[in-house]
Image (cartoon, rainbow, N blue to C red; front, side, top):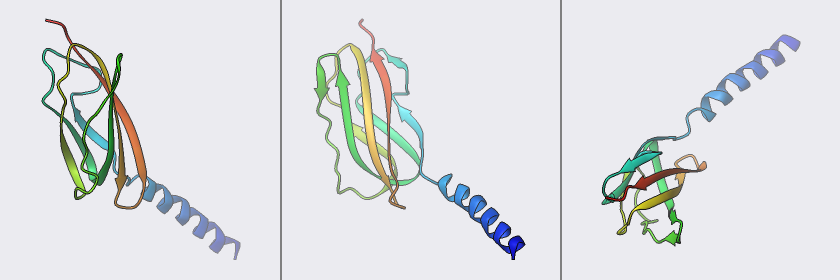
Length: 117
């Protein structure tokens, strides 16, 4: 009986870790985190390991928050291209939120800057 409990517990741990490791993760972004651009980006591109619903994008700058439109009703996808507003030189932080198909909410951010020419 004790052996059966130990096997069940071990299987739960192994399979539980496997499920947790299967959550969609951000695999790539443009601009990349820490990147310095010579010109303002025309779009923000986020790529995930699995399909997600992108629920929010917030862009902040020294002067405050800048509106970025996200279609919250769009179908789930692995890659999103979001039109960027007109941006000037400076440092920016892009915060994103997404919802995976398994219901797992996730968020992250990246920072980039646009150089003065």
